[in-house]
Image (tube, rainbow, N blue to C red):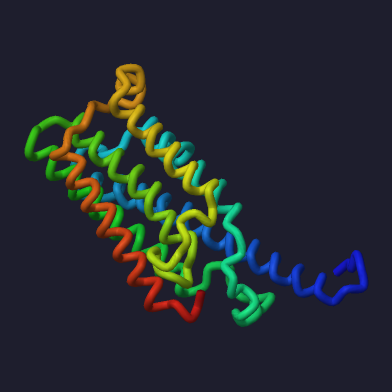
Length: 229
């Protein structure tokens, strides 16, 4: 520890910023890993039930680079939560995620993976159109990734207790990611590259319902493990 001045407040501020950085790293890991495991479960589930792949390689790359990338970068800019110095100190040998973090990743991955697979199966059996079904699955996973970041951004408070304007980088990242997702499914150019088709309200309504369910589950898990975070 190098002191730049003789003010004890400097040490306190340094510890505070260290805790903020540690917390943000944990959030980014939770965010990335839950989405990555969701994709694995979706592909594995399609193989298990002999279904066409719900996601194609270009769509997975799009989600990982665009839908995940922008909010994850903004999440690193998440400011201090206000009560950071009231938390217990972190032991040096304590795992970054811990048991509760792993449970949160597991629950998000399973709920998301199963829900996206069911959406794909429903539209595939209903229409017989794998392109439409893939577009629904692709959009559901992308939009879900964009919006549940608001639950991940504060692991101690529910989404309604958080100040939505506290991290404007995150707001612009989510807005930009959502607009790019619309381009991905409504632009003829990206329709050819990503193998997507335009969606209508009948598809969007189920996608939005799916997003709300996932966010509710995350908030419930956060409530159960509030003391840990």
